Length: 168
Length: 53
Image 1 (cartoon, helix red, strand yellow):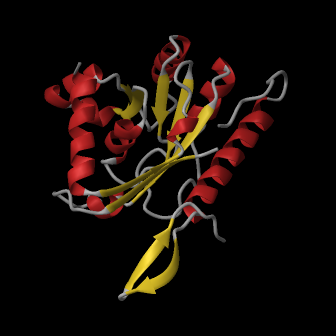
Image 2 (image 1 turned 180 degrees about the horizontal axis):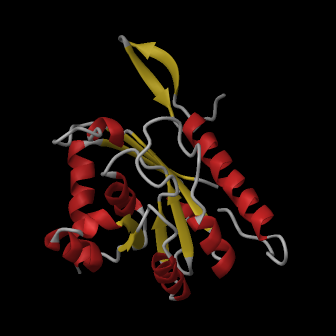
């Protein structure tokens, strides 16, 4: 309910406010466990990627995002779960494994935070660990333009050309 | 889609292989640009989905 409403809202923002190009979403399996790995250049990335994918994404999100009651409530309602980025977080990995066992799609940004430079220069091991442990395929999703729409120090979302591609 | 292989006795190697595949996939997607075809009234018509570089 909350996820669907938020998704439609973000889709509306994407259509009205940005020029969006989406490519390769036909490659996303409709059912089964799946690990989405994305590059991360802006706070908008999980919302925009989630809005164009045909399935619900259960994002692994930094635990600091859960510190405020309102955002904690919202994130949990849309299926997100916290991860401690400072050290190996067994609890978070177990949650991710359980979501995969339930045949969900788990979304991870394996760079461990936003990176404006070339994507995927160094990766944390969580996504590969989950793939091997659960035998789940990995779907790479590349997004660009959100760093122009909402830069690191930006307060307002600006119109920008957004490209979202799913890898083969 | 990147699929994990069998992991008996070589977890680290398989993790490294998957990481390499992820990085390669992202670099391919990042290289994929639109190509200007010809200028029309000062504008460029852009062609979709051709890989360059």
